[in-house]
Amino acid sequence: KFLMLKIYEKCLLPTAERCFIKKNEDWILQEDNDPKHRSKLCTEWKEQSGIVTLDWPSQSPDANPIENVWA
Image (cartoon, rainbow, N blue to C red):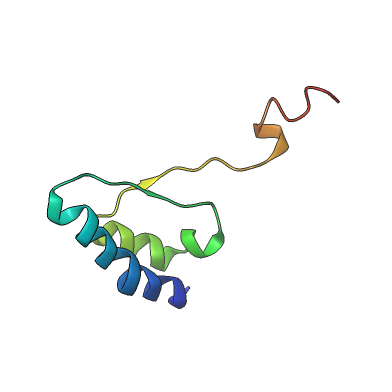
């Protein structure tokens, strides 16, 4: 959890500032549902930093209607 937060602080935010924020462009962070991305600590940090995230659906076969078409 703490490692992911350090990655956000040291890598993600500076890169986003250089590529998007200084150019006044909107951007959305897209992550999978890995628990380290969804931890309370990381989620609160992203909210406080104003980072918008894209909701990512689970990869369950039940959520994918095409998965079992040929079964």
